[in-house]
Image (cartoon, rainbow, N blue to C red; front, side, top):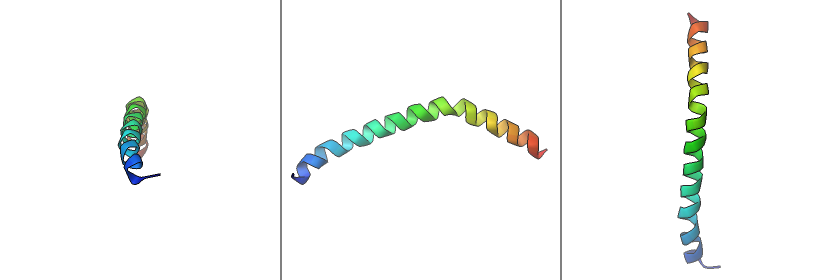
Length: 44
């Protein structure tokens, strides 16, 4: 197992993880906004 093999795989994995995280973040954003709004109302 050479390091050149890992060097080829890791950027692809990183890109996949980043895209996955972005999709998850986009899906959760409305819920987070709602939670923030509820917290603000609770603090008033």
